[in-house]
Amino acid sequence: MTRVPISGAGVVAPGAIGLDSFRTLLAAGASAAVPVDRFDTTGFYAHDAALVREFKARDFINPMKMRRMNGLSRFAVSAAKLALENAGADPGRNTGVAMGTSFGPVQTSVDYMQEYVAKGAALAPPQLFAESVANAPGSHIAIESDLRGFNVTITQRESSALGAAMYAASQIVKGAVDAALVGGVEEVSEMTFSVLDRVRALSGSAARPFDRNRDGVLFGEGSAVLVLQPRAAKAYAYFSGFGMARDTTASISDWGDDHGAVVTAMRAAIEDAEIDLGEIDAIYASASGTVRGDALEARAIESLFGESIPPVVATKALFGEYAAGGALQLTAAVIALDEQVVHASVGFEQGAFRFEPTREYRAATLRHVLVNSVSAGGGIVCCVLSKEAA
Image (cartoon, rainbow, N blue to C red; front, side):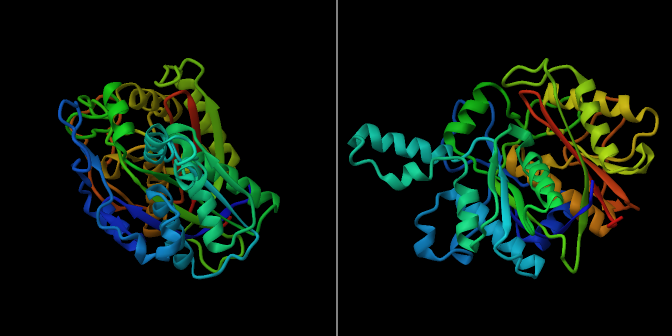
């Protein structure tokens, strides 16, 4: 595919507000997990999450406009503003927006239903209803910056953000828009946390991607937004290929066992980038500490790369899982290419597969990085990021 430059990035993450702060978080290699204090977790298996705490929406959004936004939209709009500022150039009105979210504004839906039950339909706040839809963050981004291109929201669990990137890049290649903002957003709400805890999706201690003793994910929140701009004067990296597949053995809420589907998506992304398998210099993995999901991806990596597996980086123990984690994972890979480094895979202690993920932050020569996103329910999206324009 025609390579699409990434000219800017904005981050609202656990432990990091802004791209420079996120670079520091990645280099330090310390998990942003903290005890949950916004609701009671007594009786739960999990008690920690990656929460955004050092964030003031009023630093980015006019207070009058902010009143119309829920927490999810505030994360996304702030990240988008940071991304546009970082890009350093106005992309113009013919700019699209593609955002991913795994669960959407669950807390807003809960708040609305409580008002509805207590007061009836006539007195329930209409603004809460308007904010209860998954595409509210993307809509606010477009309204805030007067962007008139496409506006789509992808909800595909862990693959939501990378699916949004795939759509946006395809539209730029077609010439449908001059630029695009693409990313992911998520919030940790009591309802979502409790459901994930009940199905034992969350770790009881710490996320340990690819580790023998992994027992679940770290739930994370925040937002990351990238600016895709073909005429940009600078580029951190380039989208150069995408691949998509589906594991038909997966249930609606768990991973299956068809690692061949993951291989198909990885190979398709590499072929789309028009490079050879041996030109992949690092893999930024989807792994987040799940028993089945990590094993599925590991078997696929072993099958595709054989005895020549490049460094495998698992970042999600740093900042958590789901759409925000997917967007932050993607941004981490962009930073890796820009800085020519590979990051440490936090949480890993004991090997379970033929390869071990990276244990330290170190310099590396990176031409192309493969980014994987393997979601519960069977959705798989992979992309290749490249250092150069051709």
